Length: 327
Image (cartoon, rainbow, N blue to C red; front, top):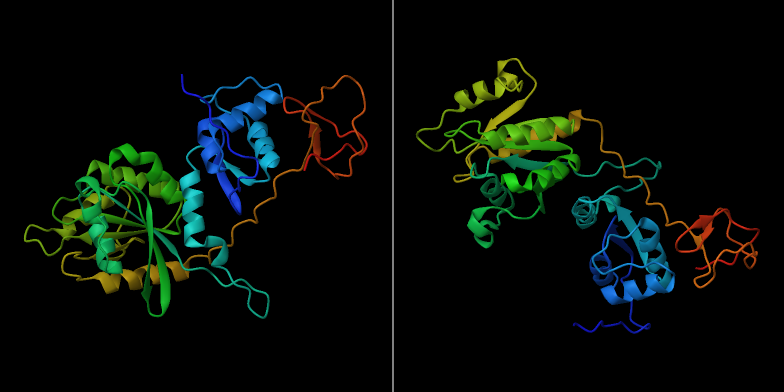
């Protein structure tokens, strides 16, 4: 039987806000706060909570353990942690600056690139940012969401590369929700494929503008008009056919059409409402609690917390007049 390991109380905690998914287990929570699963289990058991290292924790349990060690956490729904971390890496909250008039300066548009697994979306990004991540990916498939920035006409454009394999449908859907514009990459020789329609549906569900990059036009068998016809059958009408969807022929291999694509993205971004700043992150609620006490009708010590929640780890109560604040 493996012996539990415990972290010294003096061990540092991560600086800043730590993003934690709801229903995390002690095995998930501990390492993110520089603690072990045993630390989490021991603390909660001391408060009367019989939990195991693999048991999902409630929001209250996570918040109280974080408060105990002095860490600041932000709880997000399952599946959102990667998106929040992506926003942090992009500096979304820092991409707005106040000018002298106190107005908000719009951040660079965030572009999510979607498409069929082998239609060249990653190579398209390689061409845009003059880098190559394909060789480091298993089978040439991007297995994670990466973010990159490009500059055009002295303006920054942020690109998000989403996984193209069907196994990552949920991640691609979250990528669409984090974007201002979707670039749908369709190979001019293959045309619209099932994953193309899947990505298109995610983009439509996100209610964001779609720009189509018709890739691989350098190939002899390419047929951009066939792609336009197939997309029209999906209610995506090209602008040169009287619709409102910009479709730009490009070649990730030769670089043809890349400048036109970037200019089109800036144009589409300009006609949209300027991206609004994210809502400020709310501070975690203050908890008034007495770790070892039980509620037996006796008043708790006076508390100076205004509007705080008061209670034991297992239950919460209306704040008694001035109960002692646990943090």
